[in-house]
Image (cartoon, rainbow, N blue to C red; front, side):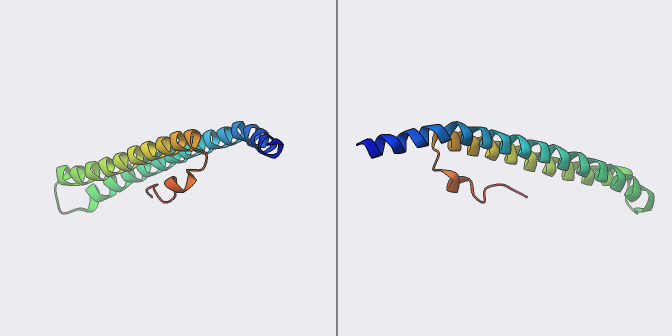
Length: 107
């Protein structure tokens, strides 16, 4: 019984550290997504300008294509945020559930 209490005490000490680590990783994920989005947004604006200069289609068609790409990016960012929040929630409520989050993030 004493060994079990000692193990439980050890686990109890590590849980706050894990919680902090999970929260830090989630914050890093959000920062990375924001950086990726900013970069892609800037590249998309540049690409649209260049396509409008050289394309054989109307500016409206080029803008529609760019809008579709921007919407796809937004969906990806939102999906990653939902998945990240879900993983944080699972990890904090079930410390051994790290395998549930493996491979769920979109690229």
